[in-house]
Length: 218
Length: 170
Image 1: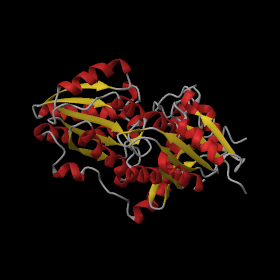
Image 2 (image 1 turned 180 degrees about the vertical axis):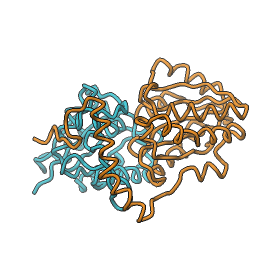
Image 3 (image 1 turned 120 degrees about the horizontal axis):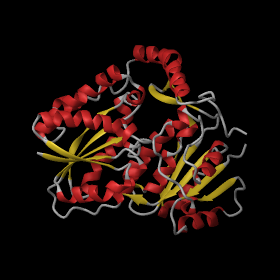
């Protein structure tokens, strides 16, 4: 099985969380005997080849970060340049990832992805949905491995069957909402450990203002 | 107190924008009309600098800053958009994607879901007017969800044909 993977993240490849997810997922796919080619839409020079690959191949996987409840504007712009495929033999699957952790945060975006393939005369091959990935950007190697290894396993399973219509993919999302006691604990962590971590990350990036600064208040 | 209403057009032909102006002519003096279809507005590049490097400021130096400054002082924002795949077209989606400087990196729970803590105190309600074949049901769902992210409310989603209803919700 050969898969065309399109990274729909607008973030440049070097810093793309989605690219790190794709690399782990691709490693798993290869273990199951599948092959893939990858195009990153953050580099507009790859758009022409990505379009060509979309028209030539029948198994497409679009990986993307959730941007304001749906797909990023850049990915939408790319999709607007495609025309419908002539034959209905292509299947498009998706990896949808986000910063917010709960599954319910990604469902509106997922709904759009369910409708999208039909508009390009393709079939929908399912969507691997998971949040809690903001940390990839600021994680150390151990944390990164913890986040990405499950994607490798998913890649192996996808590589074997070519869709996300397997039980492990459904479970992969995790909780739709956190239970009340967990929310209390997380809310405490947001105000303490997470806040400190964000401030440290900001300092490391050269930030000199408070993170809740209001530059346009006046 | 009268609400400050920001109306942003993203459709190059400007027909809905003009029609809306005619319908509202003289009825309200708190409206800020911006034709962003002639602006140079990039997509969001997801750099997170507006959260972690220059809080509240977008690192992309284009015409979007004009909109951002207006959003901070508005109570409602209406975006006029073409449609793609039943959804907004990319120029309008870019306007929403670039809104991230209005929220901070900090997190809290609101109505049982994680949210970013808002940077400013104003509540920016959101309305959509679209041309073309929009998926009304999906657009309404999306608009409601989007408003929740900004601690505000959806004012509704209206097709070009129901523009008078949109006016009644302003």
